[in-house]
Amino acid sequence: MKNSSERVIIAVCFALAFAVGCNALIGLKEVPLPDDADASSNDDGAAGADGHDSSPDVHAPGNPISCPSGPTSQACGNCGTQTRTCDTSTGTWSTWSMCTAEGECAPNTTQACGSGGMQSCGGNCKWTACGNQACTGAASQPCGNCGSQTRTCDNTTGTWSAWAACTGEGACAPNATQTCGTGGTQSCGGNCTWSACGNQTCTGPASQSCGNCGTQTRTCDNTTGTWSAWSACSGEGVCAPSASQTCGQSGMQSCGGNCQWGSCGNQTCTGPASQGCGNCGTQTRTCDPNTGMWSSWTPCANQGACAPNSAIGCGSGGTNTCGPNCQYMGCMGQNCGSAALTQTCNCTGTSTRTCNNGVLSSWSPCSGGVDITSDPANCGACGNSCSNLPEVGSVSCVNSACVINSCATQTYLNGVKYAAFGDCDGVVSNGCETDLTSFSDCGSCTKSCYSCPGAGGLFCEFCQSGCTSCGVFGMGESGVVFECH
Image (cartoon, rainbow, N blue to C red; front, top):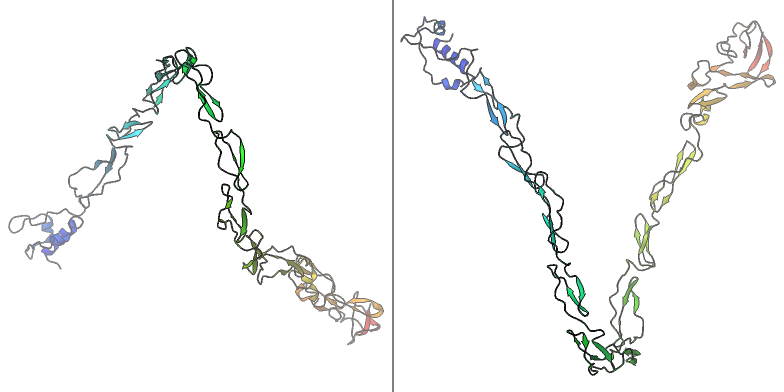
């Protein structure tokens, strides 16, 4: 039995187990109690020997324990709320719950909206209306003759008003011209006003040709619009324009528009300008018409991949031949290896396929063959012949199963055929299993002739209608034949 001090420590540990743990009480000094002290007196709060309450200040099991002072809810996130609860069994707070009922934004934040606009987040964590939107494009533009027109931006929608009427136009359009004075002109400047009239002209050319590309001129008096006299002819050339003459190696030269002989051109060179080379390639050379000499041959260009009629192996035993254009014509003559080209189908039929340049065709439809659902020789499966059933006569195949139409017969006197066997058990797989020439099954299943008078131990072959008496009919292939009456 534990002493009183041990019981006190155990009681304290039990009460504080969830709050502080028993390790904190390891250093407690035991308080000795009188040997005759009852543990229950401490439970009732009786004073110890020194006149003070010696029981620990603990909560009795089951009494609620308060949590440290603090709120049960607090703000979180964007205007949200989270809560916690007090566990009165341990005096501890739970962890804060998830943040709930948050708004869409953080107070005092801003964001762009609309067309260059802005909106801010209010104290309720909701966005204000979009404002200060901008309009795309210019607020004014030129119009007419140096005029201008304007439009107004609606900042609440980011859209322009219609253009205002064109104002401030000038007298003319920039760069426009008009005649003035005596054949003169005036132009419209960038300020849309006409310049002074100037450059009055005289009628007719200011110069003219003379001689062999010579020129004579006259001067126009812009103040009066009259010409001076023609000057003397000057600057003549050595030949008349468009005249021509032979030169060099069968070349020609002509007199140009400046009345000077051109270079000797169009000289010819002897030989071809191009020739074949390499694998269907081509090389060229250029004739210098000024000298009549060929340039060097160019490198062989545009060659093909191979020499005509050459061949290489390819694919599965195939050959790739080079065509006349020096390009391989494709892999041909490939085989299909050991793949079979024929197969048996429908028991006795044949299906074929072909090998076309290494590629097998699909199997052809089955040629010949039998229908295993109705062919007695292949009933239900290839080679399963209904005729192989024991002692059968006529058989057929119905829905892949053999059917016995009649059993084997035996020929006796006067060529009359009598049933020799019967399918008495109705089982097809064992054929006609019953000998109908026996006394017990004479002529038909379970038809007995043992009661035939006079039969004795002699052989009775067939009884066609009940046996009232049996007499000797004659000799059959198996012995004495009795006629049953």
